[in-house]
Image (cartoon, rainbow, N blue to C red; front, side, top):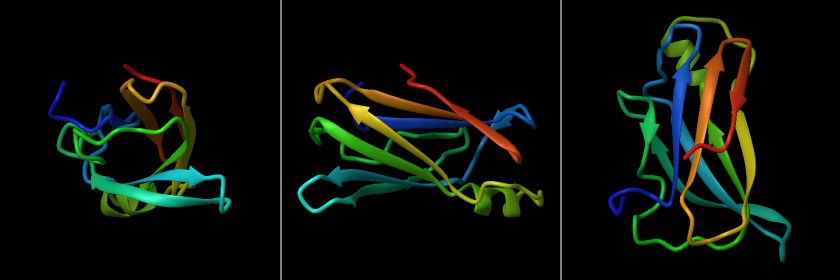
Length: 118
């Protein structure tokens, strides 16, 4: 799909059985030369819990380590629920820069699960 970021995500609130809407996302790339993550993009999940706009569709990836941070605390405050994880950070490795990487997050106030999606 040419109209999406090369790295995308999807959040599902598994307690409510519905998409995690309006969750802020930060995408970072690790620079081994200086030993820190650098911000590449940011976005917010849509009504379907997806964020396809973290990077420009034409932007090329580099092989290496990336981190996606989900602002889950703000989401749970907005939905008037207590939670344990104010942020969920998912660190992952991009082996093939030409591939698309999709990071799904299954979320509840007390746990989360993630995997490499398609």
